[in-house]
Length: 138
Image (tube, rainbow, N blue to C red; front, side):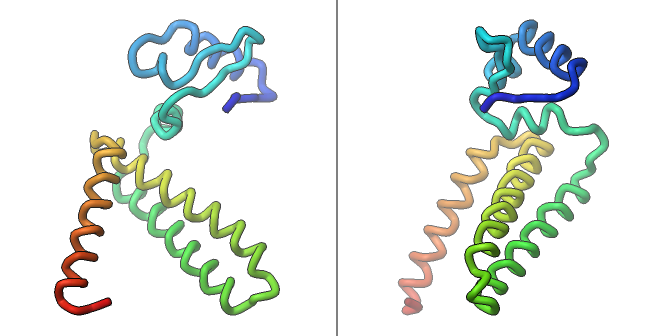
C-alpha cells in the first residue's frame, strides 16, 4: 500500500521518518525509488503509531463495540431488505474491518501481540466447538 497525501508538509515528515527509522518503524514503511512512502508489514502497528495520543482503553472498547453493533445492524438489514443486500454487504465488510482493526489496536494498547491474541481466540473457539459436539449440540 502506498501512502499518498495532498499536504506536502505531511509527505515531507513521513519521508523523513521513513528514511531515518530503524527497528520497529523501519519494517512498517519505507520510501520507494519514486519517492513515495510504502507501508510494509503490520499495518495495524503503523496505524497505532500515527494515532492521536490520549485514547483510553475504555474509549477503544467503546469504538470496538460501536463498530460491532453497526456490523450486527447491517447483517440484519441484509435479511430485512433483500433488494439492498449487496449495498449492506459492502458496508458490513467495512464495519467488520473496523472491528478487526480496533481489536488489534486494543491489543497494542495493552502491549499484547494481535497475532498471539487471535491465535488464542481461535483455539478457544475450537475448544468450545469440540465441547459443544461432546455435549451433543450440533
